[in-house]
Structure formats: C-alpha cells, structure tokens
Length: 133
Image 1 (spheres, helix red, strand yellow):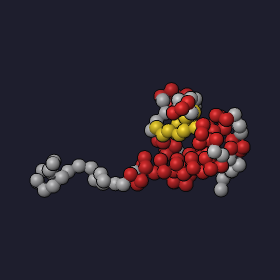
Image 2 (cartoon, rainbow, N blue to C red):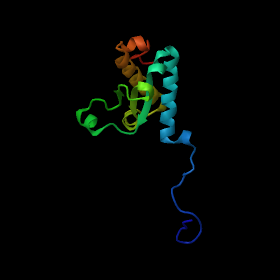
Image 3 (cartoon, rainbow, N blue to C red):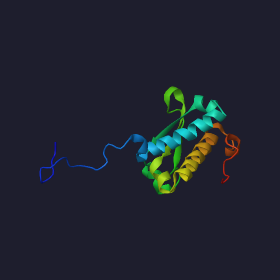
Image 4 (cartoon, one colour):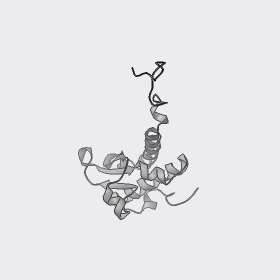
C-alpha cells in the first residue's frame, strides 16, 4: 500500500471506485445500447446483419480529411460476416454537451450508417431522422 508523506493512508486517484455506469465510457455505452435496442425493435434484420462497436477516436486519416469522424462502417468485419458500425465516442462527446443531444447524435449516426449498409434512405430506416424534437 502506498502511503502519503505523513504515513496516514493511501494515496492515489480520488473516486477510483466509481460504478461503471457513471463513468464516461459507461454513459456512452448505455446511450448507444438504448439507441441500438430502439432501432433493432423497428426492424429485426438490423440485429441479424449488423453489430456495433465503440472506439475512442477515429483513425488519424479520418481526422485529417474530416470524413468519418463520428462513425464508420466496416463491411463483413464482425462475427459471422456481419457489417460493423463503429461509433467514435470522444468526437461525438466533444460536439454534444448533454446526454439527450448525445443520444440523438448517436442515433443519427447509427441511422445514417444503417442506411448506407442497406442502401436505403435514412428516413426509411427511422421516420424521425433529421427532425428536431
């Protein structure tokens, strides 16, 4: 055990034992899973053909070009040859302040990528796409 300079106890990061659902990653994963369930309920073919992964940052090439900064699609890279939607948590979080706007941004990225995978318009995937509440 590491002690402070007065030998009075442990030193280290404050709040180290925070429950996962309250951490930054935990909140993002919770919001993403809520959006996944919402979309998967609308059409079960999404669950059969697509999986979602979360990564912190996009590749440096995406940051240089400005394309695919928030999400990307990898065709056939998932288990069983599923297409994979990759959400980049840090770039999405930087542009959204509140949980509600972050949830909307995650949902919007997922709808746009599902439309890309299935060759449909985003409005066909989610009729509420693009409308502010």
